[in-house]
Image 1 (cartoon, rainbow, N blue to C red):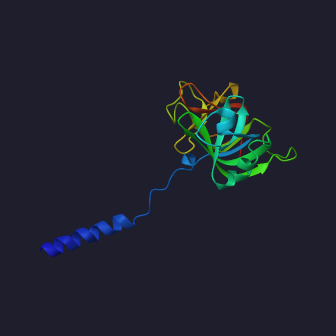
Image 2: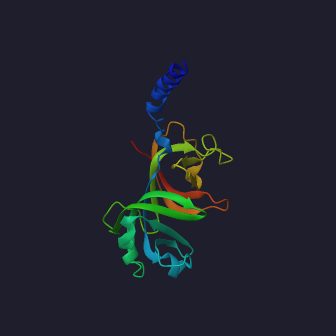
Image 3: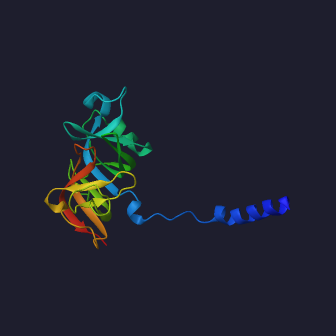
Length: 191
């Protein structure tokens, strides 16, 4: 009888173990981030860390740390102040902005890349108040995996319902509460 109970328990458990993993909502995926700025060294220019590391200089006080194999070209040019356009996924490490670089290329003014010092983000829009419970009023945002990105400025005050995928151009920053924000210069619905 014990053998029968064990076999029954195993037979019932196998379908649960083989079930498909829960599918994630597209809004949970990281927003596509494209940033253009001058190459710099995180340690030498910003005094952060124990050794040289690749970053982009968003302004005199704000580095964007670059990680991943694709950031090697920026690392080689970190003392040349060469503008680069990098693409990847944004996240925060404490209050430090980090971009997991998928692609890095020297900036070309003829390309569709954002202007120097600006970022372009693209992904499904959510409401910072209704969907994320991070804002006091309806504000456009990206869920962006584990690091939400909240829009700031006049173009941010909107409810995301029905907006779908949006593209936002603006300046990246970390606010006083340690939240990733983009001060939006341009917001457009994408198809």
